[in-house]
Length: 467
Image (cartoon, rainbow, N blue to C red; front, side, top):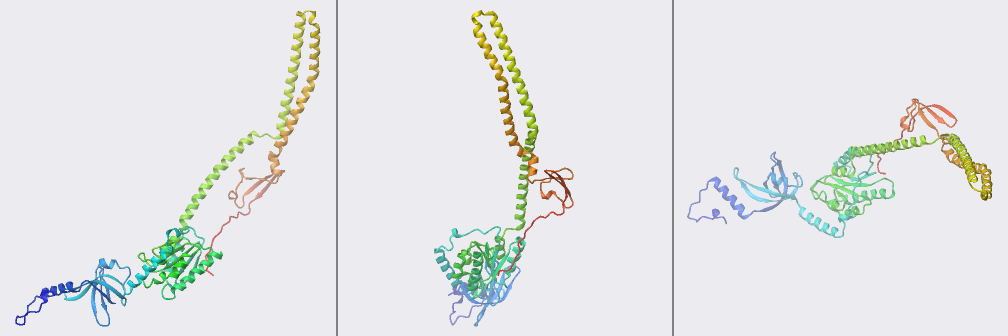
């Protein structure tokens, strides 16, 4: 016992205290004998000061006590206390000396019964984790551009409005299939399971293009969120055919559904943002890809056009090639005849000179040589004719190979060459405008035409309710 409160001897007069000293002594006695304390009761007369401190009373049927929770402890709360809540607090008893009031300085607070629920949460989490339901290798990344999104939450929940607003802002072209379910209370687990299984069937049978499922609700106490710790619900989430994103409660709230899901978001709005990439960014990326593709195609067409111009410059009409080949063959024939004649004359001159120098003994070989020369002279026209025939056959083969490549032959097969009024070729639909005059070159002449309509194509998805 505090010596200050020891009973004086019967004969001694009572000690006379100063008020402040008495209050401090009482406070010291409370600190020494009772602190720390844990109290259960109902929150009443709750006041939140602008400084961040909270003042309230804890009461039950037999009494009440004033409480103060200072800013540091209040900032660590995972929920917002309300009047009428049954809570358990831990702190220390003290006396507020300026008024002499007994008060409890609260250092931590939780909902009544939360400790038992938390123990159940940890036990079930350990058991399911041992089965591999929360293994990281099971997790699948969410689609950046889903074809459709399934949504499970309460029709009355603020989370529904938050998710739809975020999706409408980021990806209005993506359809959302809503499966309503209670998110709090005894029937909530069974309704959540039924809603998820409905979306699973739609995803499997292809009735709706579902690539991602959102399971969301707003914040609350551990009792409010307990439906998302249901074992059957956790197992159903683990069986999803598509990635599941959970956004249950606030950033500090964790449920077993979060551990079983493929992706856990801190809030419902954050879950919606993880489910679909913003349309503006994807549109900009597509524009950049389109620009790159157009530039690449333009460079390729320019190179092909240059190659075509080079080949066209080297390519003569077949008739002209035949004429040039005939002229060249005739020139070769003339040169060959002239060369053979000159050779014969040289042979004769050489023979005459040798005959003048040699004796009669050489007359017989000279006669034979002259006879051989006469035979060669007779064979010359036949050899020239044979060479001309071979050149003509080669020229005919060249004519057969070049004829299909002539522009007239290409046009004769049904093709046409389009040309604008200023003489520019028209190769794409985007170059034509309604009312524009265009000339079509065909195999047997030209046709004047006028553009009446240019029809681009476009497509757009639209949202529809889940049937």
